[in-house]
Length: 346
Image (tube, rainbow, N blue to C red; front, side, top):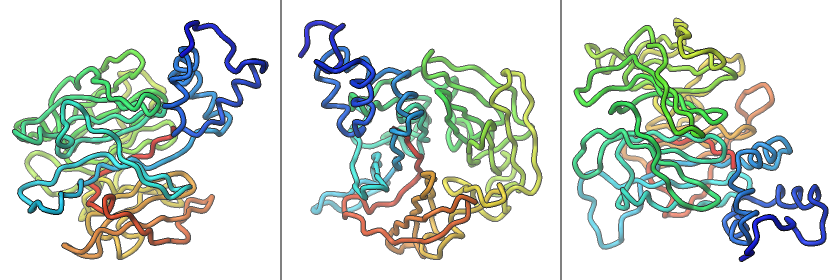
């Protein structure tokens, strides 16, 4: 370890060239590189370095999945499965698993939400896996240090809410509270300041809705009211991200098929309209989950209730239309049911 913080990035190289060398490191090497000296650690963890890597196209998109963990061979399935976070690199075709959250070492909170911004992954809310009590915990995973940090709690308990993340902010809206009352409230979390700010309420309650970021807008798709559980709406609402916290939500009619639950399966089609990932292929029509990775998308699901879980990689054209679909051969330990997922740009 270096004892001085202000040393040359790489001995004998100009700073600009040394910076470019570190910029080109694959994210999987950041953990080892951060232990070389304090300056490398601070650089690799810095927000400016992340955006420099993204600007120079050196970041790397991977799928983070909330996935059922395999049971020991001698165990019999009892109750709900335990969940962890799996990471799939679509370029190399490799799989990895993130270390458990120390507070929930035996499995993630049930039905927690997952989001990513600035190369970090956030786990939010859900139910305590032991007591099934609703939670407002927020945890952040840093791929450089490979450690979890507990962040500021959500302002209230909520489950099955919409979430979207962009440029160091995480937006949440809708869902339901501990009394299973559908919510119209919305908040935004600033990861740098580690604080929450309340937004104006949506026009309607939206439980079991789905969130998606499109350009400069946060969309909340479908959902249902307290008095009409399971009766999914065809409408959606969007919020302009560049505005103040007093911006009003815009309601959009006929944005979604009423009969389809939107959770984890909302995509954006060629014409900018919402599509359902479950409609892409009959192999994933049940329990579908789609993670958009830019030029590709990872789809998971089953052909029918009780069928083995399948994994597909979809090539996307510049127009947004789906192209070649490849069935993935997945290691047994990563073949479990996928509850939800997000793209992480590391």
